[in-house]
Each structure stands twice: as C-alpha cells, then as structure tokens.
Length: 269
Image (spheres, rainbow, N blue to C red):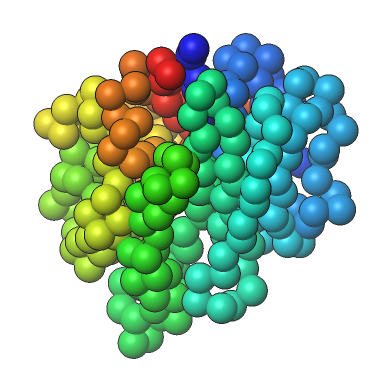
C-alpha cells in the first residue's frame, strides 16, 4: 500500500487555512504535520479540516506562539507530548497510527529558532535552542521496535545541517541555523537516536535542498537564498519502503504563503 507523510511550518494555521485546505485537496497525504500553528486548541479549525477527510487530529497549541498539529486520515492509537526544557512551550506532539500492517509513531517537532545572536551567554533564546537539541538526543528511533512500532520524526528543526542545505555555507557559518554548534548538535541527535535522514536517501548530499526562503527577500525565487530547515527522519526499517521525497518549492509563491514549503515522504508499505 502507498502511504505518505507531509510536514509544513504553516506560520499560523488560521491565517493560512485556505492554503492548508488546497494542499490537502490536491496532494491528499495520509498524515500532515503542521508546525508554528500559533493557535490554542480551543480555536483550532478542527471542523473544516475534518470535512476534508482528516478526522483524527492531535493539536498541541498555545495562543500566538509555537504550536504543532498532526492530521491523520486513519485513527490515532496513542498520543504523547514532551516539553523539552520544561518551559511550557507547545513544540512537540507524537502519535501512533496504523499504516497497513505497520504501526508508526510520528514525532512532530518545532525546534526553537534561537534568535539572532549565536551566543548562549548573551542570548537566552539560543541557549534554549542548544538545551532543546541536547534533549532531542534522547528521542530514539528504536524505542518501541520490540513492540512492533516504527518511528518517523518530522518538523521544522530550524537547523540546516549540511553545506548543501544552505545557499552559502561560508556566509552563513555565523548565522543562527547553520552555526557549527547547531549543525553538530543536530547531526549528533540524529546519530544518537539511530535516525535516518530520509530527504538525503534519494537526494544525494551533494545536491542543494531548500525548504525555507526569507520574507525579507524582494524576489525569493530569483535570489534563491534558501535553507533546509524542515526534515523527515525515520527508523531504519522504513528506509527501504521510501519511494520518493517531494519538496513543494512552488508553495513559496502561493498567495500569502508561509516562508516554509511542504515536504512529503512517500512510502510503499
């Protein structure tokens, strides 16, 4: 059976609900993970999204900031939330769903951006980001394999780890999201947790991939100064089932877009 998971930092789900609806109608992923929903749970647009066939929704939000939500076409069998750093931010939710004969835990993350100054001594936002990365190392892909549960980790991880994940490695080495302490921390979390970077399974590391383009660019497409901040990882058993990755670059040019675009992983299970 075919199965697909999409991730998208939507930068306000209520403001961009028409874009979410259009995306769901045209691409029909089995699961959509949204980040930066900026919406408390009692104001989340459950009704409109359920009308599109996504009846099973795990929303974890707060007013005006952060927030994640996972929309599924199949029942959610279990759910979990973790508050990394114990600061009260709605930045993580995970759920278990059935996909054919498999059960998969899907982690939906929105890692802190980290502010502008890459120095934890003077920038508490950057210190929080580094602490968050340290705790992310504890999230393991094989945690539930003995119970027959595979794992997928998606989201806006707010770090572009490889040189080809940014428009200019040299110019961004001192810019938050591509500093060595961040990229090394993310790659360590990936290896410590036995995760596979699915976006680089079919797209070689020599090839540039961007999923985010700044609102500050006058012509984002012409300048193409992007970064790969959005990621899809999985446990080792799912790698052979991956058939392709789609990065919907065209979504950055939609009316009133997010600065991130959807990424979709397709599997043959």
